[in-house]
Length: 141
Image (tube, helix red, strand yellow):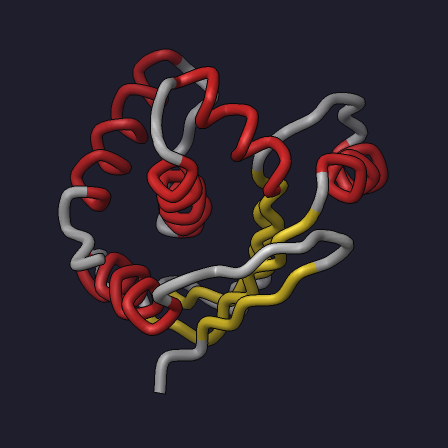
């Protein structure tokens, strides 16, 4: 059983192809030799995620994703991943990509952070983007 769950807070949103997404995300975790304990994706609004950003990270700006890693040990994935549907919609327009494409990128981005990828430096961002692109190419959606 794949322990990936999808929830929503204060948004009207319907995630399609949930089973395929779960398999895809789980494949990324297995490929990196991690064990999946549980991931909760919570889809929310800009305002909801801004409150979390302020409260937990002391950041006062909009973001598309915040990942809370609850992993109990090395190579174990347990997390809550909050994604702003508003920000994903905005960014899809900015980048000229379909909403679903941008949403999938953000979803795998959160998982890649849990797998040890960083994105603070230019070099880290390049490595992260390549990994995102690689996993986007492996979807069977």
